[in-house]
Length: 430
Image 1 (tube, rainbow, N blue to C red):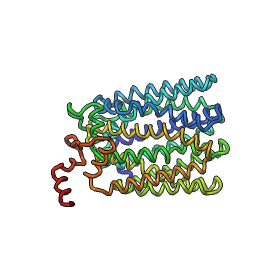
Image 2: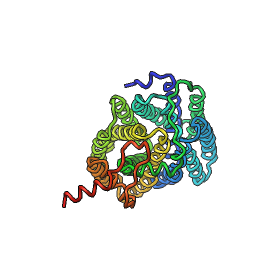
Image 3: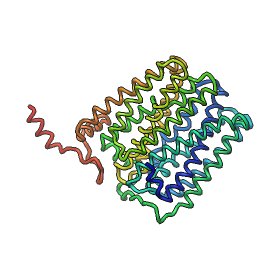
Image 4: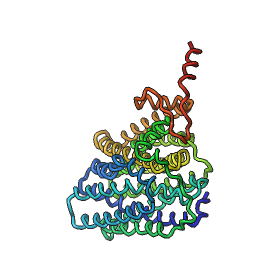
């Protein structure tokens, strides 16, 4: 279950990640509560999420292209330093009681840095462990993120009450130094280098063509968008379901515990498959419907635990398959596309769910969103059960490309079936 921890480099990387994630969740809880307390609106919390994720939607592919071309350790060091400065500025403006628009501006700036940070971190993390241990490392990373989430959330409530919200942002500012130290201390001779893209396959356009040539990737990204927008924005629905800050903190902790369990479950599996992703997506969708029907906060918390576990299994499986089923030289761009899809899902889903919670009701919103994610998952499973060449043809029809385009050299999902053979099969049917 913990085989990735055998590597010295990964142990250093994992420890730094735990510290950084803990600080990030302290800031997120403080930020959400500052916005909610200042505006009294769940829609404003959704707007804050939108501003933090919008840069990834707009600039994600370009950030991935840079991660595939430039030394990633330099990108990471620069971005972590900027994150530290922005967190310190956020502490200052909240302490001075600046208008909420200034807080929103800093949230957007932090999201802008995260755009370039994410693909570089993902590509560098893929070099810290071997290809065989990558799935285990991604799962353990989810466990560490969930542990940091628990530590961050639980300590945020105590520290915010004792020292105020600005203290949370200052602590987060210092936490970024841990990642910078890990990058500098990791032994370069023990890394597992990834191949770089050839000259004819660099750039954003080449990455997008690579995705478009695979019906499987297009469908997985579409499924990921639906699950993330309607089934993963619990920071909004939990706030809407909570009568006060104490209940919100308890629900957040329950959700974090569930993510730890989900990460351990994913780490215990030797192979993370798309079939597993689909099965867990169906289960979590049904549980989300149930969460809107059960009475009382206790019932909601009980159902929330397996939902959180399932969400981590889905995300871990998606990230693992994207990295292992694609060419090394495309990994940064594919991770960036995956991040952009998640950001777009947050940008659309968070405000939409906030609006629905205010105008329709939080329980009703959970039922509706769970039903929609279930329908999308069943559709994706039915399409993935078809032969690969039919999936690719469907992707091209969706993208309005009437003539199938052969995948780039080295594409893992194989070429589209030749047109001549397709015509011969058509004559047989007649």
